Every structure is written in structure tokens, then in C-alpha cells.
View 1: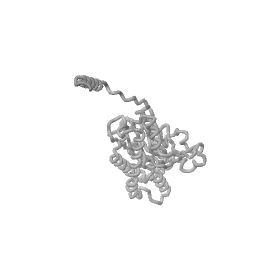
View 2: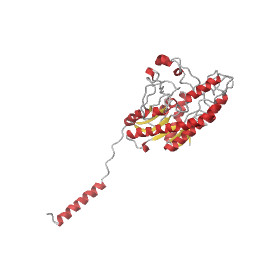
View 3: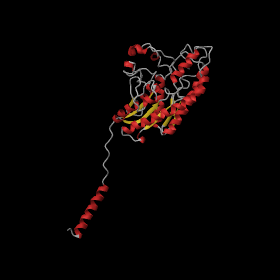
View 4: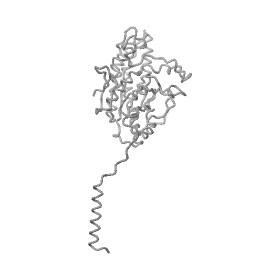
Length: 344
């Protein structure tokens, strides 16, 4: 049996070892050498529809009309080593979610995000979705165009004023469910909610009532001026308010695009498109080259009333300012220098 003295010596030795261990610096966590990345998810407004130079495989080949553009706004940001675009033209909230859905041959964007987030160190996720849910933005614009062709009928604004608030109310929970699934995807990839910025954006108005009152139709904007005014001053701002509410409830950063193309909308430049950041009615006669017979119909004109490459460059500039700043909410507004800036 050890003597009292030997036990005291052993105790003193163990104490000294413990003190030395506490004094040593903790082992450094292994360095994360994955490239940083910022990722976009959503629909045509963020996929780059209308900006041209679409990724091979998304130009209509085998039914994939996602139209992910090399000019898309996410590729015009300067906040990470990599920019990754998972958005798809025509997508709705369910196509972003983890649900087992297929759109233009592609599956869940959130499921693809898991693999992307594991292979890269994602610093920000930018989401723009909802227009193809209950608002049915594309069909709404098409209906307004059809009414322009009937000079004896009424415009679309009066009907939309009654319907639009209810459509936005019905859209919100679907977008919030998609947001929850994106967060779940990032958790599955090993991220805590605070490890990255999660930004949701609204939409920019593609049209304006400040068009030539006679020539705007033949020039590619066949819309009645009161209908265009309703879209720019009522429908799009209400859209923005809906996303502001979603962001507040879900704890997201919010970037308001509703006035981002103000003064640069389709047909705002009169006879020239040089100053415009939104496409006019645009028919692509070469869509059949990649999409074959499937191109004939809506796919030949699906680039219409979407931001063009100039517009995406400006939107990417604004997103860069927002992501490098500390504000959790801001608006993209044209500054005195003629460029977009994130104004909080």
C-alpha cells in the first residue's frame, strides 16, 4: 500500500501535469481549404433568363429550358471565389424545396445545394422565387398583352387590383416552406444557420407607363399605359412588401429589387434599347437549334420582359454591395453615377 508521502508526491505530479496541459494552446481546428462560394436559387429572374449565353444543357436540349446564363447576376458578384447558379427559368417554390419534383427535367434545387455546400465553403445563398406560384407573373403579363390587342375591351389592371393581394397571400407560405428546406439542406451539408448569409430578393418591374404613348406597342411593349402603371407602381411594390414580410418572419436578409430598373425598363429608351436593363418582347428564332420542335411556342419568347445582361450586371453590383455590408435589409436604387447601389 503506497505511503502517505508517495501518494502526496503522485498527487503533486498529476497536478503539475494538469497545469501544464491547461497552459498549452488548444489544438487548432483544421483549416477549411474549400473554395468560398455564393449560390443562387430560384426562377428565371435570377437564372439569367434574357441575359443570353446560356449554359450548354439548359438551352432546350432534351427539354431543359432552365436558361442559366453566364451573365446571370450571381456571376456578376465579387464576394467569393466561386459563383454557382442553381436557378431554373419557370421554377416555382416547390422546385426549390426538398420535395421530389421535376421541372424542365431537373430535380430539387435544395438537394443540389447539399452537394454544392459540401464541396465548397458557401458564404451566401441568394434566393428569388415566388413569381411562378400564385402570382403567375408570366401568364399575367401575357393576359395584359392580349388585352392590348383588343381596343374595345378593358385593361387588366382593374381585375388585378382585386386579385393580386390574395395571390400574394397564397404565395407566401409556399416561399416560406422553400426557405425552410434551403436551411435544412445547408444543415445537412454541415452548416449552422449563422455560418452563411441567406438573402431573399423581390422582383424588378419590367415595364413602365413612361413609354412613348403611340410607339411602345410596335416597339416591343404591347401593354396599355394604365396597365403598365399599375404593374410598376402597385403590383411590383406589393410583391416587394410580401417578400419583406417573408424575410422578417423567417429571419432572412432582404434585398428589394422593386425599383432596381427604374428608368431602364423595357421600352423606356424610345427607339433605342441601349439604355434599357429589361428586355422587350423578344422572339428567339434560333431556339429550335437546341430545343428542336419543343421550341415552337412559349420557349421562343421566354426571354421577354426579363433583365438583360446589362441589367444583371447592375443587379450583381448591388448584391455585392449588400453582401459586403452589414445591413440586413436594403433597396437597390440607381445612384447619381447611373449605377445600382444597395441603400439601407
